[in-house]
Image (cartoon, rainbow, N blue to C red; front, side, top):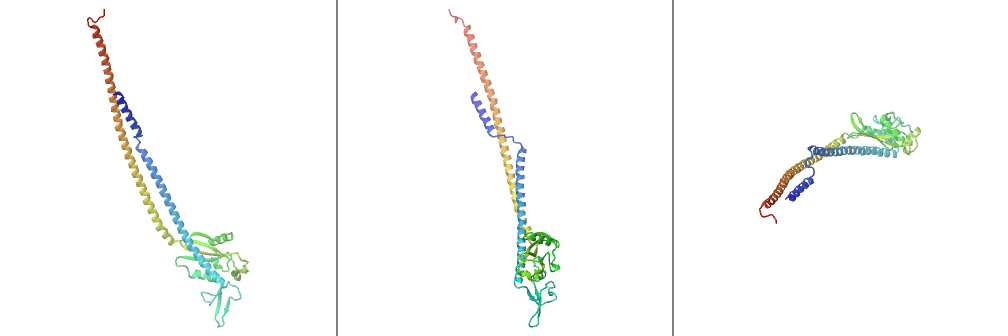
Length: 315
């Protein structure tokens, strides 16, 4: 019985040790899952910021493509006029002879007596840009650090762009406000070719030099509408994912707290059983010791009785 009780107590102690520490404090779970929630929030926030940044870059790229396309359209038109040496038109109040074009055949009269004036490429392009602006808020302009027409003198931003071309830059772009509206401004250089020498040879230019620049400004309002719509979708999707993640963390927290409580209760019951077995063991050992004492007393008593009987003495 003594061995059996000791074995049972040993087994229960082993079971309790295998359950780990059942008395993990409540603060431990709060710190653990609070840290998980913080990490998840940081990851979701970082992903949101990155996607919003990418969306903004995408808007700028789309605006850049539109601005560059507008510049290439103007350059193509200028090259076409340049390939024909300019175009002759009937002079009007809106299109008077170019006072800055000093060439012999600027003004001619046809055989029928009709007067014509030559519009050089820059004159044609400037009139087209000023009188036919893009209906979506695109503005275009040609300029130069050494303009023949003072009206083509560069502003501060254009002068900075033109100086960068002289240092080897192939384009120049920035986001600026014009008239209270955000615009993407871009400029590309005009390179002197043979057709340019007809009007600008006296300015000291050589073929391959930077003659000036052609700039275009695209209003960003319509692109920002696109950005706001997509940014809203991005924020909504990230918000839903963040809430789902927090819900999962909360469910895990409650599950672990419940399992910890169950382990604590199991450990408490096992400890009670161990205490009962230990008490029973102590009682059993006490009874065994008492029985042993009674047996020894009984043996001693029998010896006394046997020694006191008459006739039992030996001869």
